[in-house]
Length: 347
Image 1 (cartoon, helix red, strand yellow):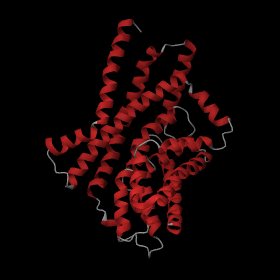
Image 2 (cartoon, rainbow, N blue to C red):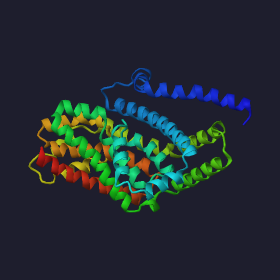
Image 3 (cartoon, rainbow, N blue to C red):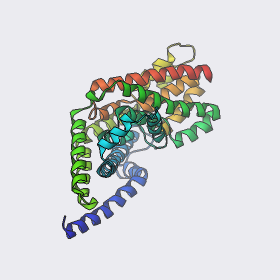
Image 4 (cartoon, rainbow, N blue to C red):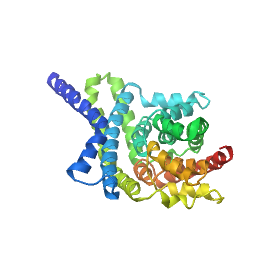
């Protein structure tokens, strides 16, 4: 790369990267301004909530997808994926890799759809599928905002049990899914970008390519990922926006009362089509409990809403085949149902 081209690239990155970070930080107020002032829609209407949700989540996920894909490209450039894969598959870590992935998910403040960009980056980087699932399971379930809200509403005992069970669900679920050897059910697109990433890393390592000369390829690969999943993002977030704006809270409470033995599995089944982040669903759970829904059933509903959703399934379709999506959703749903009954017994 010529010196002028290098200077131009550095200048563009110096402008675009801070701009994306600033946009991400101020995204919610900007979307609120656009939705409720420019359009204008009212924030207390179903349409206003749905449109606001759609614009915000679409832009947020696309920004995350580009930044994380590019970041994973940088990591892959300096830490060849084959070396990482060999380390994780040959070293006896005694399950520590699943715990670390699950714990990392717990400290990243992402919803189920926002977690997928990092999930794609992990898969692209050659990290074993079970470990990536451990992250994907826990990331939407547990974060510091939801834990703080849970603590204020339900007390320290319920909060502790919820947080620990969310992390353990990621560890156990990731371990079991990893043991199933499900890599053959990844989409052809993911397999192609894995091979492409390996070839690029091998060439760069062999030729000792300087970082600045690798950047154009890394950024192009990140943009290609955004472009190829864009349709899935739009469809998934549109489904989530409809659910977010139009499904009333009291629609569920009459079916989830304490006198029904099937309340926990029904709560999970009703929750899966919905979409919300953990911080957004905690106040809903408070309403459920106040109306007589057992806390364990309410927590199971919350876990299914934030951990499994139709928008998430739509986004995952670009990454994996329907059979793998079904196995993932079925396995985690079963664990959430068991946890719901356990919570009702303990709490």
